[in-house]
Length: 297
Image 1 (cartoon, one colour):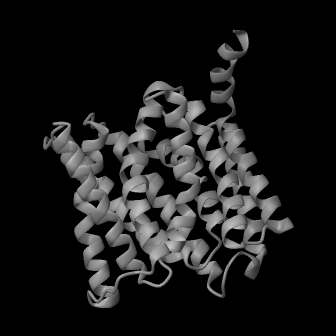
Image 2: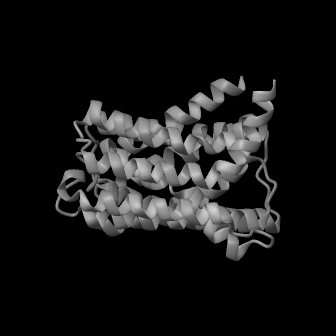
Image 3: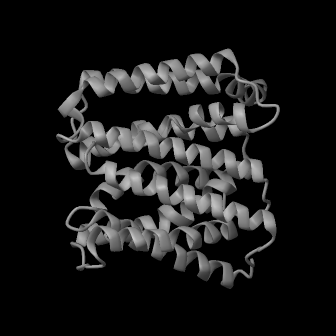
């Protein structure tokens, strides 16, 4: 696969995932929707691992990576699916776009030799200011539980970022698809227990659009998107990969507006601009180093 095609695939998958999450919970229980998504993803990952004879490493570091990844995936996705019902889909992508800021903060304390620079602190400050403006938009961004939804998404992003730093600290070098399968295998029983807790295991076939969204998320959001992302970071500089977090929130907001009738008011636009500005400032030195050789050519 060409690198540009893989890069575009990651952008499209990450941009459409928030809207697909919201659609997947319409007409069915959110816990059943996320359990079915993870079941599809786990079965697909197992099929690919077996077909490509990748194998599933079970050494100590791999097992710790599966455990950390699975637990963080379970908590983050549970909060995301609950919170996404109460806020606009585009804001889900915007809040998860804060992951690089939070990852940098966690890495400062958990990884050796990871100093926190001034531009990173300023970027985090802009991000907080942007979130404050979005909070001030009130009912314009969701239903009567929009604050709870935003807080759930912020907690999900923090847990997701902490999980990434935890995996970095473990330093497992297993194949990405094997890590995906191990992570899903740990998380899947927990999602099953959540479904049993929320609805007692009752289920009905979701409406056509919800079912299509669940299948899309299981195939692309949980497996292929992950594989493409690791393919991209293997072949491109980290700064260019980081640009994905600047592109996807804008596309997600536009898709929510065009396909879901979500309003983009002045406060949301201003808050989005501040968050993206904070992300840009946070990544600016890396972007300069990455783009300088291209400019020289």
